[in-house]
Length: 356
View 1: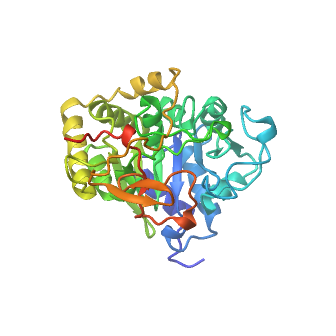
View 2: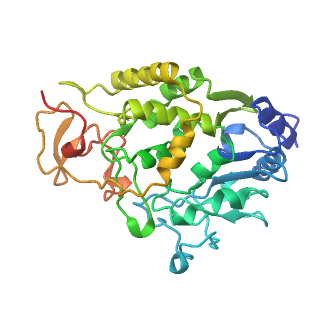
């Protein structure tokens, strides 16, 4: 081991700076390579997560499958007897070395979801994961996102930014916001954004600044990695309040006779900050939790029957479909056909922009 190697002790000390001490419940997104040189690799990070969570706590991390457009989409081993309380599949996840190291731990448990299962360690892990089998969508009722708030847990980002946070989808799911698209009920999968493009992905630094200003996000450096901790209840409360003000606040849309994504992102993140300063409710996560348990039919993605060709985001017909620059990739198109900036399919009937 080199003197410059990141050790278990260094990671634990860094997590203490973020206010994380045992016992605690952690929902982790992580990149091993961002730490720099780590002594013994991913197992060192797993050991640090165990120590920080404590014997009665939990650390859970994604063991998601590949995207819907991939041959690796959805777990195969457990499909015949899914859903169940916890998943018995030993298929690998596609979300990094640390997630795989957790999955391979002798005491690891896995949540039952064909595309978005989580794996966890610690005495509290099963309690975070065992409700996932009743959720119709990855982030719906009784999913780990809501269980984490019940346990007053934290979202931990190790070397990755706010663009990695999947908890945003839990609020969108509970509110059934108008841009959602549930496209694969047998696999309980939802794309979450088809009618819209996310501020979280396009301009993550703006969302980061907003959360930091709201006092929800804390940061420290561990090795070469910038690491963030976000209070799960605080984040849920924040998102509940700002989506009450504007259910479209997390996605970029045309405005009037213009489509300026960066301008839209600046306006919306500024508005989120204003709304939270004015209407901050630290207990709003409880409303989110209650709403998540109400029966609802997910919004279904629908290509537009009538297209507003004079909309500033309209981009013509590509591969037999009218295209909108403000929309994300449609679920049937493979990534090798699609670039990040290519327009998605027009969904004018589900757009909040109205022609003047």
